[in-house]
Image (cartoon, rainbow, N blue to C red; front, side):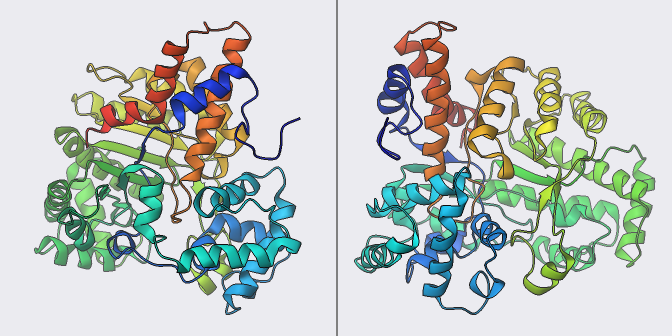
Length: 466
């Protein structure tokens, strides 16, 4: 029996161990979707204590703490950082079987050299050791990125953003990694939300033009896409709680837009028509610029109205949605493909029941001489567990080409989350090693090593061409 989380953690056989240690372990990282702050990266944010870097903004941990009966005061409230840390340490032993148990230990081991088991009796020594490291220097935001061998980071940015800190980072030769924006126009699509009209006003300022009709909106969106492109953006991202598809003429969409900017709600069908038209319009621009379009589908957000009103979004009150997507997604992609204007696209669903749909729909739109042009995205959010990652690997292998997969991303607000790439790589190497041990694939280390390194880094490097 192996020791807890030793060097061969999750690696059951000799082949898996060889593949991980000699092929996967030291590969660089391209984090092509995350929610890190470019301002914090530029300023090399320093962290005052372990709670500051470990718990602030990490809704994965907050959700687990609530399930363990921890009061909100000790999660997002006004309790001291030490009290919040102690509440998390009390919770960690209750997360056995949850990836948070492994991730939390990996975060302490890899960045701070702390090997103690996380439990209440070890709380004081963990707190003191990590805080001593943080206070010794060399543990700022940039340092964690460099220690993790991250070459490219793609943040998530609104079209109205000035990209001030991306521009500053671009000119900063002291930081060797690339920090690039991603274009996320969700607020401009959610036509029935109270944020829509104020967002249009912000877009007017960013694009330096008036927006009083649909043509002016389209012009402003294109301007912002071209600005983002000039700063290095090569990826867009769309959070689609459901996949819209409803056909409408430009004149019909123009009327819908006028109704919305007048402060009026539109029908669900009109909302779908508007969203469909805008996604197709900007999708064509993405294709011309050789961008990649990401579609994150089937999240149900802010389920607790009370907690949303108290502490806002992205705080751990989201879940999996179950809206149908096969017909709508196929038609949306086909609308672009008919004009040979379908960009490289990554499809994610938060609902694992959608995996066969995504894995087969993508096969209908491959081509253009681009390996894996349409991608079945990495197991996302509630699915980036041990079982969830393995399910995604196997579904992609069964229905497509696992060999062309662009691999893992963090989708995180934490500078410690790059340990999830290690978790992903260990699981991948173990699966491939298991297949080889069973005689299902040849034990050709050079071939398997190349396969592994492609998924870890090389495929993403070729695919995104940053």
